[in-house]
Image (cartoon, rainbow, N blue to C red):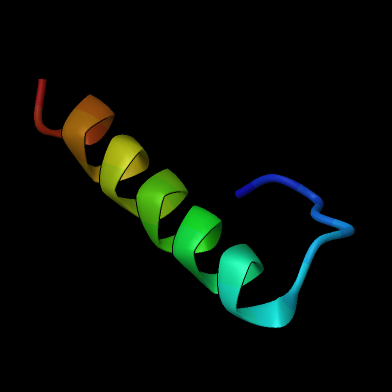
Length: 28
């Protein structure tokens, strides 16, 4: 994920997106 200084909910959304990207990279 990315270190975020925004709100907690935003941070969780970004972490989720990072997780999906990492999973997509692994499946290649």
